[in-house]
Length: 291
Length: 173
Image (cartoon, rainbow over all chains, first blue to last red; front, side):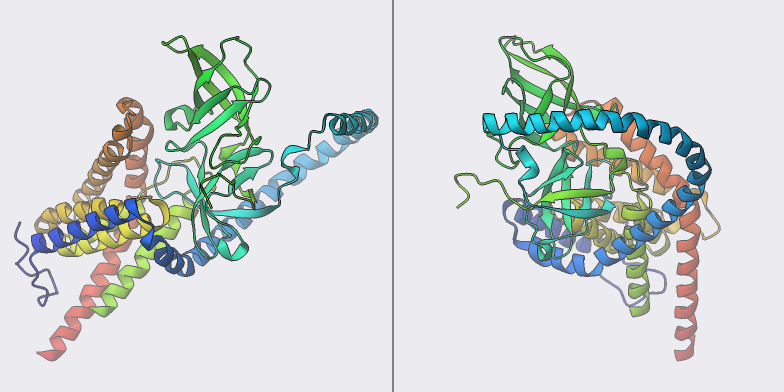
């Protein structure tokens, strides 16, 4: 295909197509090599993109969420009226339960002090952020939140929703940040079983996730103490994640072919289908080599 | 010429925002149509390979900046999509809807295959059948459905631009 024949309406353009293709291919290759080895561009590009694109994404998402909310509100009114009477009964029973639980809570607090266990991640300073856009493709589950380094965020900060781990910040601009979720296929986390402190690796897997699961592997558990339903948390030796954040619960375990390690699946603690807001921990894990 | 560049940039911008915020339907995991591919292929068919290449390059770069760890990867893919689809420019007539829609779907399908090879197969994820039926095909079908509505819009904008350009060209004669 010779594109020297003039493009319709633009007789002035006479660069041969193949030549331009070659130049741009070289530019792309150079960009890829540069970004693979350095972070030269991310600062400049991210700032420009953040100024131009993010406000629109934020606006569109806000409007769409608002419309969705209004529709749901109408739908809810009739259902709510029925629920009110049912709930009133529940309130009575719960009040009784609550009193009992408060006593337990008091007892727990006492025991914690006794064992010198700090409440794990209640101590971290957190900030809330809203999800304003998701990944442009269907391959990796990353998304954009509406806070960036102007709000004190930084790359590698951990992101939670509810009580579970969502992921970590991998890219940042002045007022936006990209979060890579733990279910993303290119994510891999060092975790441990809460009760036995056995280390394992949690890998995001696109295929697994559609069944609502993520994969784990390399669990060394010679004593066979780890059972289905155990909590998996981020491990102390992870270099990006703060220790003790809940990732999920073991769903299946099986022995690997080497008979030394085990692998299986776990159900994430976070409902990734319905994420709207997340919490960012304003603290980056300190590893020995960082300073 | 300048008017064309500005309007194309605005269209790309709107498509990018729609792709990332509206069509995501606020779920991080649901399938989204590839509006960038629709835009690239449409311009490539309507205006030839050079225009397609440039639109593809910019669309890819925009995606790269936000969502890729390797800036330049999507730019390269979309650029080649634009360039290759430019081959059908000679066979293009505004009345014909079948050609552009099938080229868009094929291009998105090929884009999915190449993404799979470059991003997944190299990391030893070989469940080809799953990725084909679970990710690539749904995206292609969704893209086709959106293209049925979006393509005529892009076409209309292009015809309008060509009208203006021809009129101003006639003034000089």
